[in-house]
Amino acid sequence: MFDYHIHSEFSDDSTEKMSNIVEEAIKKGGKKLCFTEHMEFNYPHEELKFELDYDAYKSEFERIKSIYGKKIDLYMGVEMGIQGNDREIKETIKYAKNHEFDFIIASAHCLEGEDLYSMDPETQNIDEFFTRYFHEMLSVFKQYNDYDVVGHIDLIRRYFLKAHDHKLEKSQDVLRELLSHVINNGKGIEINTGGLFYKSANINPTLDILKLYREMGGEIITIGSDAHVAERVMSNYSKAIEALDTAGFKYVTTFSKREKEFHKIK
Image 1 (cartoon, rainbow, N blue to C red):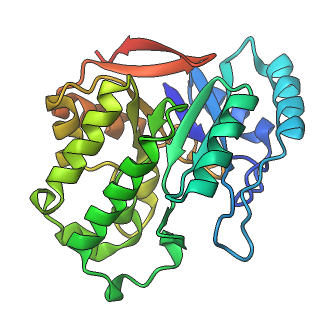
Image 2 (cartoon, rainbow, N blue to C red; image 1 turned 90 degrees about the vertical axis):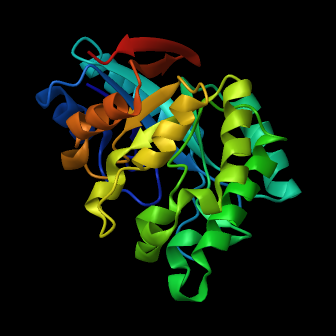
């Protein structure tokens, strides 16, 4: 089992110790685990800043790796929050260039400067919302290319229950353009099981997007629990594998020093 989306106390929305996370992963039979702490410039939330203390993170990671490294392969990654304005894009490009990671997830937690989690879904036309969300990601990726996979590409479905009424064809043109850009630049997406713990109770992305990505030639895909507490590490791994198999994937991807490796699903 692999888990390539994990948050510990080095992310503002988690208080979990790295050691607890690693011990839980070992107990569950995990083979590879990558921490992906939040880093996002000017995140629009009063309490959450998502400003990563890189030196403290690296120091603790190296300490934990020295203790547990013979029992499980450990990697140091980051989840870079992306926003669609020039200032944040430039800062993100500079940060990724100047810091060393095994793996970089690029995730859109905001749309047009607003935090998705705080938005009122009842005020949104959900079909237009998906189109705007995918378009903003695409506009960022046309400038920012220093990442490995796109995180929870349909995050809207996690937070907005009404998003389940959205039919893919309503936003398919811009989604196809986004996925094509990702694939043609040698990048991938993740399958994120964290949504199964929300009211929406779905994996992100949902099966329709997974199938579209695969049909378009997408091969690079990582599995992540998006765990912020130790007990959720490696959670619902079998469901992720089942979804990948159904969508036509033969391999799951892991990263080390930004280099990808493919592992047979079966």
